[in-house]
Image (tube, rainbow, N blue to C red; front, side):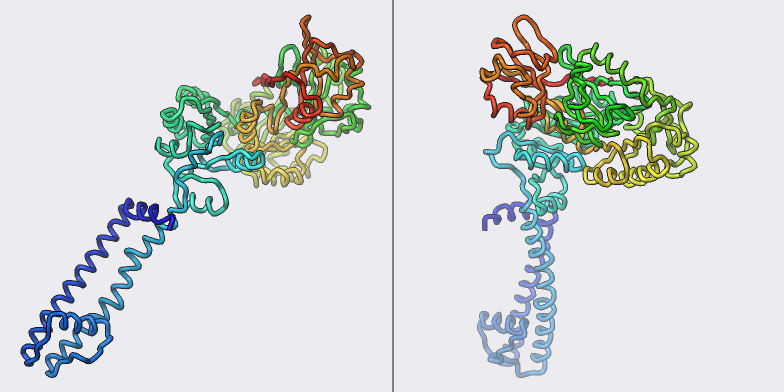
Amino acid sequence: MKFLPAILVTLLMDRGSRGNLWMLLRFCTLLLAMMVLYTVLFHILMVWEGQDHSWISGMYWVVTTMTTLGFGDITFKSDIGRIYSIIVMFSGVFMLLVMLPFTFIEFLYAPWMKAQSNARAPREVSPHLRGHVIIVNHGPVAETLIEQLTGQQVPYVLIVPELPDALRMHDLGLSVLHGMVDDPHTYRNAGAERAALLATLGSELVNTNIAFTVREISEKVPIFATARSDTAEEVLRRAGETQVLRLGRMLGMGMARRTHGGDNLAHVVGSFGDLLVAEAAVHRTPLVGKTLRGARLREHLGVAIACVWERGKMQTAGPDTRIEEHTILVVIATRAQLDAWDETFCIYNANPDPVLVIGSGRVGRSAIRHLTTRRIAYRVIDTQPQRALDPAYMIEGDATDRAVLERAGIMQAPTVLITTHDDDTNIFLTILCRALRPDMQIISRVTRDRNVNTVDRAGADCVLSYASLGANAISNHLRHTNVLMLTEGLSLIRVKIPPELVGRTLKDSNVRAQTGCLVVAIDTPTGTQALPPPDQPLPADGDLLLVGDEDAENRFLVRYRPTERHTGAWKRTES
């Protein structure tokens, strides 16, 4: 019964349902007129036979005859009367036993059941809901974002314009809201003015419309939108977007950054103050096979290792973390220390042959631009040569053809970047490239997270997910951090030096082992000291600058309970 008002409103507001009700009313009117006519003819024939009955009796005879009940208490004596009875009986069978049920089911029952089903799709959220995330356009990024929000216990609502899709997703347990994406009432019903964030993940044209629409409801809610081009990004910002996500460009840059490309130089990806954040490959260096403690990088070069990338997944780094052949180290250092790193490791893994890029779409072109910035030679394989940034480096053909790969130089290339948007193709190419070159570095992308493990098992050294990239960029904003690359990212945390640590050295306090946070600087009234020595006592009048993920930050706060803290963010390097 609680759905009855919503069902009636849905039934009466739908134009098709109103038409069905009008058809049913016309049929009932026709049936009533037929019964009245039969009653009049009944009286005429009865008078002709010399019988006298009331009008109520006449209607009673018509109803019992048309419904084939035929009690037999009122009958005709003449043949004409009996023929009339047969006509009334057959017309009653057709109208009441055939047409009436069909008409009732078609024009009333079926629309009623449809309206009852449609009423299950929510059209507004609770007025008490606050701090939720509104998602527009269900796709790979939205799927991953919903999984992350569910794990973080952050409420969300997914706006779905098509009713069948809304009902299907609602039955799957998703928190959906049925409404048109260009209707201001949809966002009022979704509580946009109370939301923590709105993510619109469709095309640039739709995203622009949504931004203007939402800004009618709220000027403050952050709006994240996806875009493909510089022009679209500018238009979206003018439309009111808070953050425009160029996922194709970001994914291509991430793939290019993770290629050693014939060198083991440290490549800067971000900074805070005088400290730089760099990623460095260790392929074929003496570091392979050692633990971080055994490598003694802090003692020899002064650098600190914040975390490591293993096959595209970020992992916390501790003294016992083992450095593998395809490990990527995330290094915290000054410019001079990075120069010393490059001087030490540039002699290893020298390969002048070009990196092979399969696909010259948005991701491929972004990777090529970043490789060019790093002065790494490349070649591109694509079936559409008109998409090439430089035709001189384009190999036209299908990369699934072994002859094309060999013509492009796969037998000599240090790295292959597989950038196509089709996950099935990327799995095939990963297996093929690994079969041809067991020793080369293979970096592949996937669109959906569920295919990451598949590509990893196929032989890729690093797998980057388009869906995770977008989802992490949004979910990290909710945690007040910026995405470093693809996973949870890192935060810079400034805390007042806890009394428990005053006068103790970093080595004695063992902050890294106990919490997972790396002390990268000490800020005092006299200045900031980057990467302080492990045997230096901590002063009483200063702040610690820590680097760690969300779990490490929470462990530090629980362990030491500092009186003052705030989080800062990496400044990401785009070039």
